[in-house]
Length: 484
Ligand code: GLN
Image 1 (cartoon, rainbow, N blue to C red):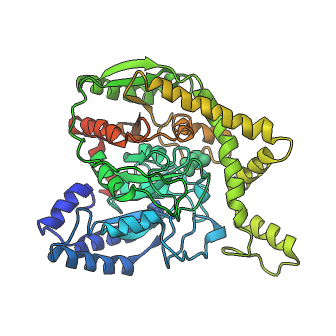
Image 2: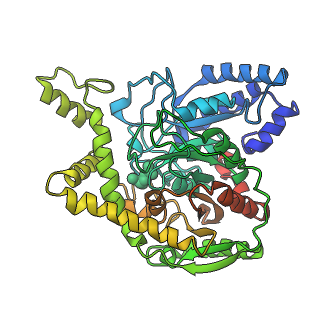
Image 3: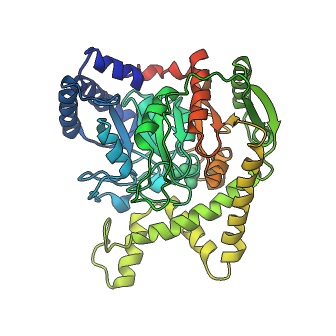
């Protein structure tokens, strides 16, 4: 049951092959067995999940179940879950019980899905390796000496190890796509504004988007259907008609033009990833698409631009953790200044502190124009690169990450090297457009991701392209032997 897709599980529930209670119990048993190795979950919700499963079975037997009803999943611990610890993998929020549900959690629950638990992540979603978590690193099920990617590393490892059939993630600079690539999943970052950010703990508000992490594009379409939609509780949520994301999955790719940015195949890309990605692109030619070289001339500026904007937004967003309202509070503060400084000193880890320092500096009087305003201007140029490219092509494709999964501890003390892991994903967040990563092969037993980037609100188009690839390849069906 744990290697099946959501679509297959829905069929199994429908035909009475198994009940939601059996299915949920199966995943809880696997979590108990394997989570000590991978550390994908911060919190497991055994009793709650079993109660939800029972209710789902009742709905199904009375004929009231929708497609995802009764199927379990795991939520990244960045989404507020009412009555349940929501830690963002930080000591700061280790004792925080959310008083309400994030809209994403609410919508997925109303689709009938069962919450197995909350997944591990980089602290406040800052990282590309899931090593900055207060709850310890997550291990990659494909090679437990390696990182699963980050920041949604727990969500990725949970699905890859067969501890959940799907999960939610968030992507500010690559945190859905990069761990999806490193763990052999399909991970989708939607257009900014498509999925509500209400109740999703903020990192960099103009970049953060929630999305699904699944085995297949078909499953991602089902999950996105449940997650997307206008929310008046999020001021950046967009009012739009939501298409049926599954309806166009079988459309032919004949005549589609796929743009290949030459900057994505230049310095920094490992040879083995380049080869696998080129093989995948050749597959698209067989499917009837035309490849066309394009240029995204400002893409080399995306990392410096992001590392001004994201820390600036983070420094303001994280100012709320002051020891007064919620979360960690230091013992016996001498005065208010001591309360603030000691609480924050104790509550945040090194990477979070580094971001707050950089962001506060970039926003300070005298430096604002030199850094923040300049970065915003570059952001506009990066967006313009995509607008221009999409005049000539339907989809843009390239690698998701420059390297396969790297060793635990290998990059964690070298922030600049770590930041380069997102060199192909960050521009997409700066531009606000949708992109997904899908499995495109293995090198030395480690997964490689292919990234497909779409125009604003063209999720259906990239899901279609991913599904067509998955109909003629079986990389997405591979699972790590140690977790069979
Ligand atoms: N790795 C990037 C960072 O550390 C992106 C993280 C994310 O997408 N949440 O900022």
